Image 1 (cartoon, rainbow, N blue to C red):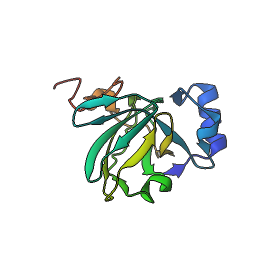
Image 2: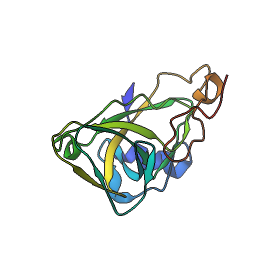
Image 3: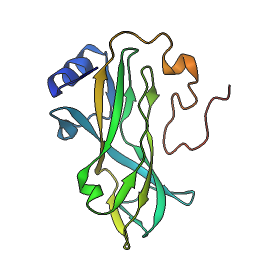
Image 4: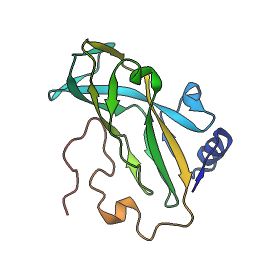
Length: 161
C-alpha cells in the first residue's frame, strides 16, 4: 500500500476519484486530511452546540462534518490528533473500507479525571488514504454495507443482511 500525499489527495478530489464533501483547505495535511466534529453523542444525547463538555471517564461518539467517498482501490486509516490525546481522549478506530461512502462515527473515551471541552467544527482525527495494490473484488457496499450512506452518529446498522 502507498500513502497518498496532499498532492495525491487534491488530485483525487479534483478528478472525482476520492470524495471529501464538506472539504476545508485548513484540514489538508502533508499525508492526510483532518476530519472535523459535526456532533457528539453522550449517553444517547446528541450535542450540536458550540462546545461540548465531555465528563471525565465517559464514552462518547463523534460524527464527522465531512462525508467521504472511497473508490474501490483506496482505503483509509484513522488516527487521533495528538491535541486530543494530550487531553486524555482515547479512541478505537476501524479501517475506512474501499467503497465506503458516508460520514464517520468515531467511538471515543475521555480517560482523564477532568471534563474535556470539544468545540463543534474542531479537527478531531486524521484520515490517511492508502492506494491498494488492486481493486477490491467486492467493495464495502457490496459486502456488508451496514453503515453505507450513514449521516450523523450512527450506532445501529442501516442495512441488515
